[in-house]
Image (cartoon, rainbow, N blue to C red; front, side, top):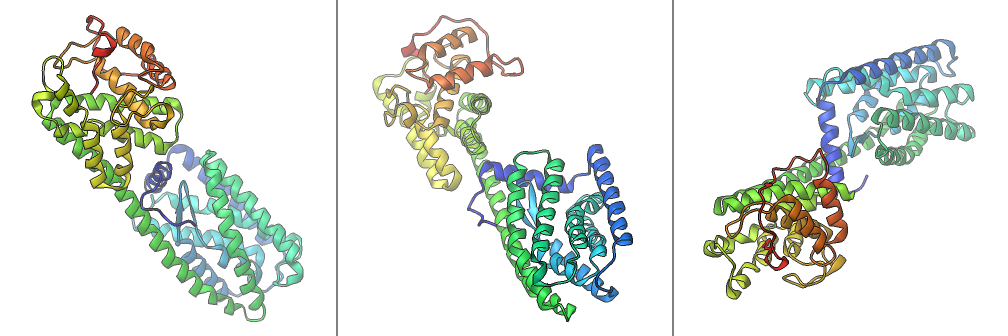
Length: 456
C-alpha cells in the first residue's frame, strides 16, 4: 500500500472513480447472472466440504461467532487500489482455518462477507444486490481449507508449514483467477499483485497468532488491536484519496473557469478553444499515449490561449496583419498563460509548460524559447497542430476559413518544419475517421501562404 501523492495519476484517478461508481450502481444482467452462479456454486462446494470432511478440532459456537465478527470488522477495512481493494482479512482468516473446524470456515467467511456488504448497502455505499456477490467473493477461502483438510494439517503446528504454504498458494491462485475473470481487464493484474503482497505480509502474522493460541484459541482474538490500527491507516488513506480526487476535480474546474473567462473576454477564442480540445484529445488517444499525457494534452488545449486575456482587444480583433510591435505583444500570451497557471500550481502548473510551448515549431523557429523536435513537450506538439488546423478551418477577424482539403495540404506541407510529422499523421487519421464529428467549415477560400497561417 503506497502513499497517496498530492494528486493521483490520471489512470489511477479514473479507475478509482469507476470502482466507486460500480459499487454504488445496480448490477447489470451479466453481473447478476454470474454473481448468482458463482455464489451458488460456492455454497454447494462449501456445504459439501463441511458435510463430508472430518474436522480435526471440535466446534465452539461462541468462538466461531467471535471470529466471524472479527472477520466482518476486518473485511470493512478497505485500502482502495485502482480497480479493486485490499482488505486485511488474512490476519483473521489464518487463525480461523487453524483454530476453528476447518471444513466450516468457508461458510463462516461467506457469512462475514455478506454481513460486511449488507452494512455498506444500508449506508448507501453499495447497491443492495451486491450483497449477493459477497457469497461469490468467499471462493478464495475454499481452496486453502480444502488443501488443509486433504493434507491433514488443520491444527496449528510448525511441522505443517509445507501444507500451510501450499494452502496459501492455492488461495492466491483461486483469488487471481476469479478477479481477472470478473474484471476482464489486464490492468486488474496489477491490483491482484498488490493483494497478493498484502496477504503474503499478513499471513505470517495470522499464523503466529494461531500457533501461539493453539491451547487457548480465544487468545488469537488479540489480533484485534492490529486490525484497529489497520482501520486507522485505511481511513487516513481514504481521506487522502478523497482529497486527491477532489483536488483533481478542482483543477479541472479551475481550468473550465479560466476558459469561461477567456470566452467572455473574446468569444471567438473561447469557441476556438473548444474545437482544439476535442481534436487534441482525439489525436492523443490516436497516438496511444498514457492517460497522464492525455489529461495534460486536454488541459493544455483548453488553456493554450488563456494568456490572451492580457493581450489588448485592439490586437486580438485587428482585421488584417499585425505590425512588428503588435506581433511582439501577441507572442507574449504563451508566457503570460504559463504565469497564470503557475500561480494556481499543482497539476495546472505542469500544464503551464504545455501552454508556454504551444507555439514552438518543430524546426526550432517558434516562440518563446525556440525549442525544436522532441525538446518540445509532446502535448504541446499535439496542441500546436490541432490549434493550427482549427484556426485554418474557421473564420477569423483577419480572414475567412479555408477549405478542409486546403488545410490538410498545409499540414502535410509543414510536417517536419512547423509540426511534428508523427502528430500530423495522427491528426490526419483522426480527421479522416468517419466517426469523427467536428464542426469544420468547408467554405472555400484562397490558399494562404505559410507565412500567413497565423494561429497565435
